[in-house]
Image (cartoon, rainbow, N blue to C red; front, side, top):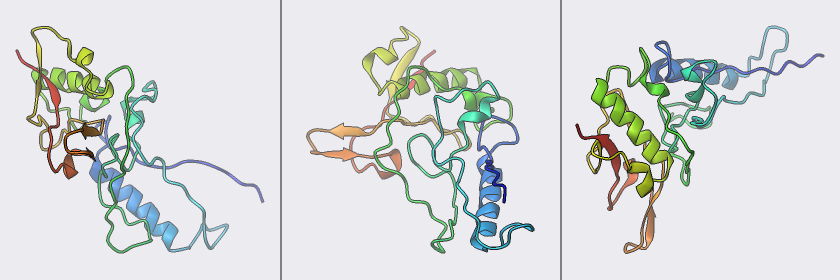
Length: 198
């Protein structure tokens, strides 16, 4: 029997038809079908399948489209995007990944296009999003926030209802003697964002 290897999935951002609701609906439908062990019309029974993709890839080429970086079930920082029952539990709750650190050279603005999760930001919001992406991808280094007289570091999360400003590093607080994970699990310490000040 010939074997065909392909990929299916649904991006969650970077296009007007790409959002968490559509991605969750598609992925849950696929996982429910796979868990049912129905197979295909030509080969009934169990089918081996792999999710595309586990985590968003913020350094992937966007030549095919801005959606290319948003196929993951998790955001860049390892936080789940939506509920997804993988067939192993009844809860549908994905556990956040830990120790996920990304630090590439450039910012990722693929969420700023028409119809995307951050597509409703004004010009100030767009610039703040780009600044913050660059800042986060460079581990919140001082040299990554050198936009003289136009940017500032803030503790206030500028995220909106639909637009999530990413945090891409794990913070270490020496005095506390522990690592503090993503924003959702912060116990103490400070999460920093870089935004436009004009």
